[in-house]
Length: 214
Image (cartoon, rainbow, N blue to C red; front, side):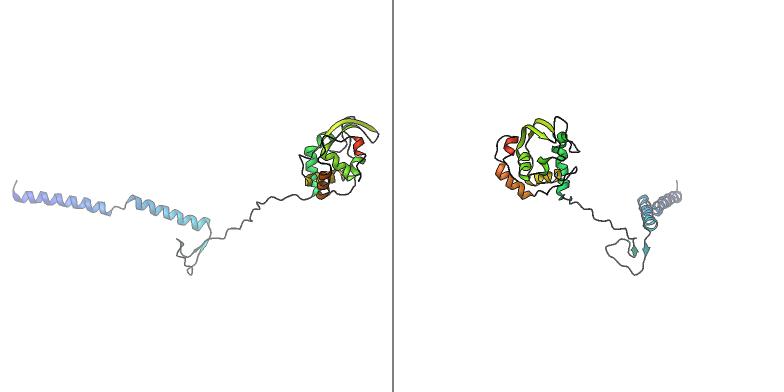
């Protein structure tokens, strides 16, 4: 092979390599195409779904989309996390009665004939506050006659289960339900009754209750 042919081959090879290099340089990287496509989709989403608007007088260096004003979203009302405390003694008394007393004296306050005495139209309920408070504190046992019917059972006391406020609410509730109408019982009154009768051991009898005044 002479010198001219050799130079020709070398020159042709160099042109091919140069063409391939130029072709690689002209080709756009895939990552750039992907990034551009994602940016386009993001812009399209904001314009279509956010339904905002563009203003040429808005500049915010902290906003990626200078001049874009997003639509205003409705403000949500703050949720109240503080639970409401019940203060109505009738409501508190009703809840305590249903939990502690209704199994025997029933929801309607009529009791069960021959077993549990009624609270409706009962002198033990609408009469003396002191007597009723003493019964709720220490309980009652023995023969009992109410509205012409006889009962002989044992009622437990609630002095360790209910505080003064809840006992007062229960007394107020049963004294003003099922047709009963009597004075409201205050927490301080129950506190005084607890100090006076709360140390008694065992339940009351009818004879002992007869000695308790108003």
